[in-house]
Amino acid sequence: MEDTLSRGRRILASRPFSVLLGADLVESSPGVAALKIPVRTELMRQQGFVHAGALGSAADNALTYAGGSESLCATAQGAIARLGRQQDE
Image 1 (cartoon, one colour):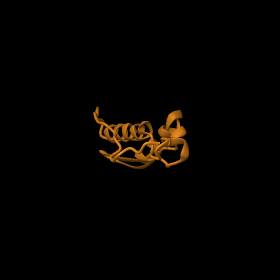
Image 2 (cartoon, one colour; image 1 turned 120 degrees about the vertical axis):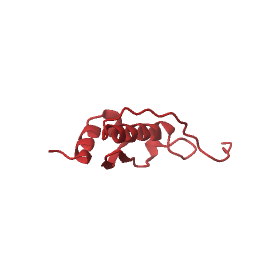
Image 3 (cartoon, one colour; image 1 turned 180 degrees about the vertical axis):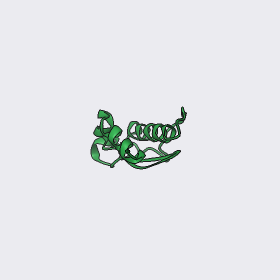
Image 4 (tube, helix red, strand yellow; image 1 turned 90 degrees about the vertical axis):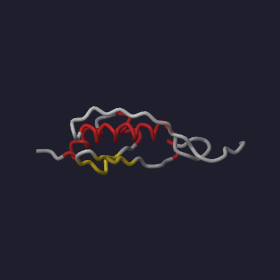
């Protein structure tokens, strides 16, 4: 029988956008999941920080895996914001 981490990694690897991001499921246990995405130039905004879409996708997937491991239906609402003053370019 496939463990939850192996199963989650297999499913994640079948999702084209997750593959594009380079997402890796690094932890999966009942009610817990952690994903890692590599910080690379293609995922950066012009100001030098990771695009919120990449971060949001990782957060969405982690919530899905954590909730799914407990057979829960989960939703989240939130905002991803960079803190600090934006410099004029």
